[in-house]
Amino acid sequence: MNAIEVKNLYYEYKNKILALDDINMKIEIGKKTIILGANGSGKSTLLQHFNGLNKAQRGEVLLHGQNIKKSKDSRKLVGIVFDNPDDQIFSSSVYDDVAFGPRNQGLTEGEVSTKVNETLEILSLLEFKDRAPYHLSLGQKKRVAIAGVLAMEPDIMILDEPFSGLDAFTIESFMELLDTLHKKGKTIVIATHDLNLVWEWGDSFIIMNNGKIIKKGDSDIFYDNNLLQSAKLRQPYKIQYLQNRD
Ligand SMILES: Nc1ncnc2c1ncn2[C@@H]1O[C@H](COP(=O)(O)OP(=O)(O)OP(=O)(O)O)[C@@H](O)[C@H]1O
Image (cartoon, rainbow, N blue to C red; front, side, top):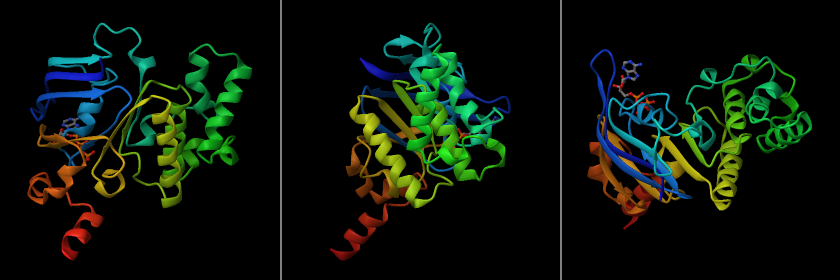
């Protein structure tokens, strides 16, 4: 069984932009899958189909084998971190924002407190716990948005451009955290155009261009510079260096 399966998915915005053009893909349970593509290639539109925010106009999306339209617990199964944290932070304090999901899951206030404090600590946010999220810096807000999803412990974590706005130290500890979640069996999906951070990290890769998938594979795809250029992507620096040296 796959965590996510997409069959013949199309999506057209009201302005007639065809953002997804016959997408077919499978994401295996417990794998780290990276969706790559330049600006406007359709990554966010695709990810937003994985928690029902966008509904398939044609085609289907299956979560753990079940059509998302029939799935009652898609919100519990899938946690999505949007690229813009302002789209998902609503509470007046960092603590309450991260507590929102666990409270909705019916945990006691004591359990909520343990969960929230643990999550805030992992993301170096404890010192901000009583602050208003909208007065934080972009990178800090991004960490709050990530914490809010982490605290719900979804089986499938979807992250749209999770690294933008984060400093190097935070990226490093965040990737270690994702590795820990991966070892616990979670499925992780990241959409990004930053190949340098993910090419050695992901298990499988999907390249999008103009609403289509143009390549699926393992990290060997990064040696094909023509392919990357056709998707307006830059080869990872390390591969450029190795190839120039040879
Ligand atoms: N709400 C919208 N209404 C109309 N067109 C949209 C809307 N959102 C996105 N689009 C268009 O759909 C296409 C795919 O956009 P999408 O945001 O999915 O790309 P992306 O790969 O996530 O880009 P980025 O890397 O810039 O986040 C683009 O051509 C974009 O202009």
